[in-house]
Image (cartoon, rainbow, N blue to C red):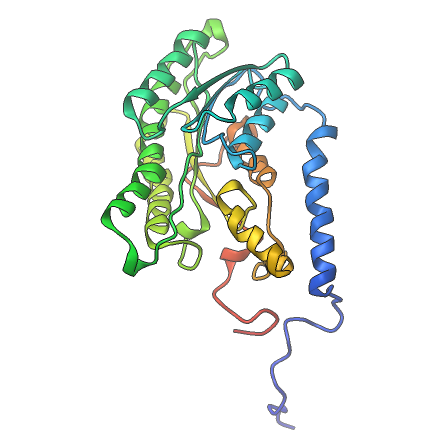
Length: 320
């Protein structure tokens, strides 16, 4: 007999799979996130970055990827952290927090524009002068506008390019030169290092940011790929991280608005995990890329988005 074609396509949400309601999923997500926040307090110090000299930019936000990464780098035994942000307000707190919890880690802070060529050059030179080596540069400084295309000025567009893209270019150019320097007396017999750039899922495809921000982050993703080939055979790896919806200082307004409306449970609903993320989850990837465990990962744009960028737009639970 011919197959029965009158039935509608089955739902992706198979009846055998029990999924929580939006409210239940919110409570589960909050529990998961709290466990992630507490992870660093109980995690053993694996020393994955032992002896490494690291620069991290964009560390100023109390709820930021840069701060979370600096703490994670310290937890993993980095020898010296050079931490940078344009706003100096929270730098003393970050420095004292790390020094109190990890007294074996040196911390130096600077307040300057990460798109300033002279300051980035001076910072890389400082690391070489004081420590004799540079191993990791996490170019995390960034900025997001809020203007739609019709209201977007050329000044705002170029500001986005300067902060988000030029800062990464300068990090690659000057950190790579410093990373090629060898210093056997400081434990670096061959050149090499890891350069990590913060991009965004907005740089992968449309729908996650403004026109200028998306263009700037797409350029960052391109820098990771093209510069890795420019640095072929130097032992220097360049990768970008593409966060999805992360609760940071940059996205606070969206989270506060959702909480006010009682729609917090819908944040991140379009990705398979059905939730948003916190900076510590991005910091885990940054730490992996900074260390030798990722020694063969190069020229990649890695999404940390709960799976969002894996799919074309579709109605959740239905075939496209």
